[in-house]
Image 1 (cartoon, rainbow, N blue to C red):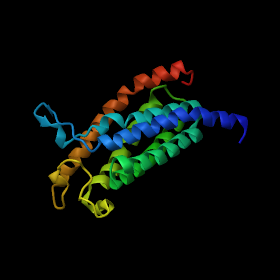
Image 2: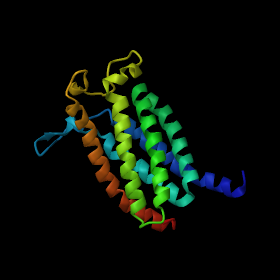
Image 3: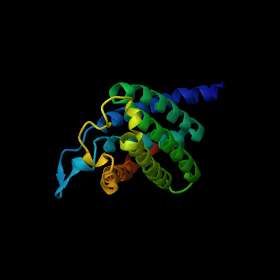
Image 4: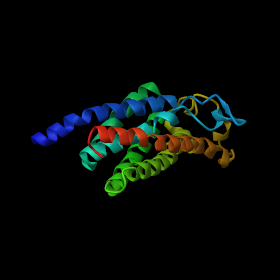
Length: 211
């Protein structure tokens, strides 16, 4: 490995550590509902705390991509993925870890590709579009694998379901629209947080001279 690559890899470690921390925290927090009421809506039926932390992963990926390029950004994703899955098995459940790992890897790699294609456009366009599309794919994969009855075999003989709270509409034969509501609420928050992340993205990019 040449000197430039070694320096780039060394500089990537803060991104890798930050990525692992965000995903592990999100995997743990997704097991807890937001036990509040908003405009008469019981948020615990449609939202978990993990939705507020996970979009930060896209901010980390996009900053690494802007500074080092797609190759190094994929390395950040890969290392963050491995560390997060290992720690998530301990902090959460195996099913949550598998669901999160799959969704994380596929969605983040999509984010890297889209960001790279749009990197020469307006400063906000690449991080916004790549994060929104990545979040959509992540939500579909994560909630499908983690909570759908069809993937119950991933509980490995443990207690049925991966949520730490009762969600009757995830049972077999229940209304599909109700199951989708949990994922929809999660995605809406991801979109709002993703938009909010544009501000720290722009600030860090300018301060680091990587925009």
